[in-house]
Image 1 (cartoon, rainbow, N blue to C red):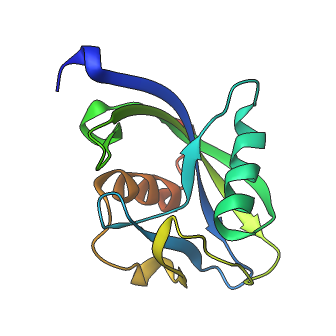
Image 2 (cartoon, one colour):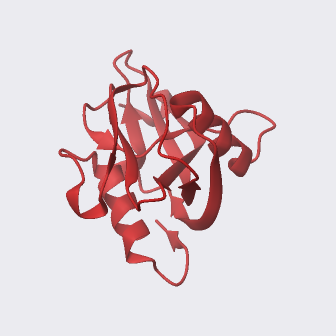
Length: 146
């Protein structure tokens, strides 16, 4: 893939915890691994609004954003290749989110959806998801920039 055919887009992701401390995960159609919900920031949208919109669209879930985890741009993990041949290098803002309820409706963006205890996450995790989850669970004192 040449850099001429690679688009770069701002992205958002949320590690969403329910009241029991479980994390919302979905098995992605792209990559066929598990990850927290994520998506692209739309024009004229700030990252917090984008994250809330994505979680509403993907899981019919209203959330509270609790803290900023970090900004992820490492091309080793942040380039997503789609079945159409399109590739996007996402620069993703990752947040910890709290859901007031465990009720959600997973969209068709995921093959499967569920709440998982942090020590019992489903396999396989997508490489970027593994990085995001490790950093979220570690609760670093400063935001991560990668």
